[in-house]
Image (cartoon, rainbow, N blue to C red):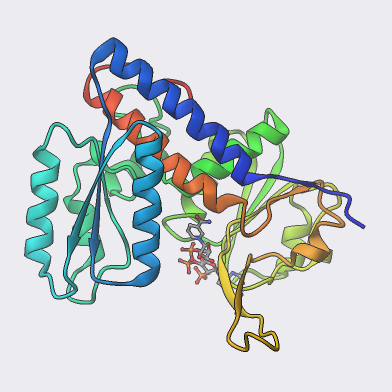
Length: 304
Ligand code: NDP
C-alpha cells in the first residue's frame, strides 16, 4: 500500500516546456529573438542518438531553433574544437551541447573548456562550476546550472516550498549531478551532507535526510529502511537491468538508484524511474538555452 505522493516529472516537465514556449513566443514578439541550440554528436552511440533526437524535437516544440552537428566516430579533437569555436562565434547559437561520452581520442574536459561559458547550457565549464559554487546566480555573468540538479531543485521547491533548514543528503559526488545538487541545496539553505562510496554507515546517514537525492548509478541500492518516514526522495539514477519474460528473454527495464516499491511505502514523496528526473533534465536544457539567449542579448531572462 503506497503512502507517498509520486512526483510526476513527466507532467512537471511538460508544464515547464509550455512555459518555455510561451516565453520564446514573447521573446520573438518583443525582441525578434529566437533562442538557438547547437547539439554536437560525435560517433554512432545509439543511446546518444536517441538523446540528441529527443533534445532536438523538444527544442523545436518549445520555439527554440535546434541544429544537429554529427561528426563521425574517428573525428579528431582538433576538428571538434574547431566546430565548437565556430559555434562560439555564431550569434544565432546561444547554447552549445556536446553529447557525452565522446570517443577515446577526444578529451572531454578539453571540449568542455572550449565551449564559451555563456553558451555552456550543460553548466559543466569550470567557470560555471565556480560561479555556482560562489553563488553567482544573477546578472549577465551568472552561472549556467547543470540541467539535472536544476530540475531536481525545481521539483523539490514545488513540493516543499521553502527548503530552509531541511536536512538534505546527496548520495553521489559527480561533477554533473552530486556536487552541483549539493551547491544548489546549500544555496536553498538546506543542511547538506554529501555521501559517496567511502561514507560510513550510509543507511544511517540517509535516514537523517528530509530530502534524499540519490545519484549513484547502482540499481535499487537505497532500501526502504534507509528512508526517514515522510522524506522527499529524488531518484536520479537510470539503470538498465535484465527483466526477461518467456517471450522476450533479453528484455531490459529501467530502474533507479532507489528500491521504489519499498521506498514508496515510507517516503512522503518520491520521483519514479522512468518519468521522474529524466524528463526534467531535457526541459531544463531548454530553459537554460532561453536564459543564455536572453543574457547574450542584454535581456532579463524570464522566470521559468
Ligand atoms: P557517477 O558514476 O559519475 O558518480 C556516482 C557517484 O556515486 C560517485 O560519487 C560514487 O562515489 C557514488 N557511489 C557509487 N557507488 C556507491 C556506493 N555503493 N555507495 C555510495 N556511493 C556510491 O554517476 P553520475 O553522477 O553521472 O550519475 C549517477 C546516476 O544518475 C546514474 O545512474 C546516471 O545514469 C544517472 N543520471 C541521470 C540523469 C537524468 O537525467 N535522470 C542525468 C545524469 C545522470 P565515489 O565518488 O566515492 O566513487
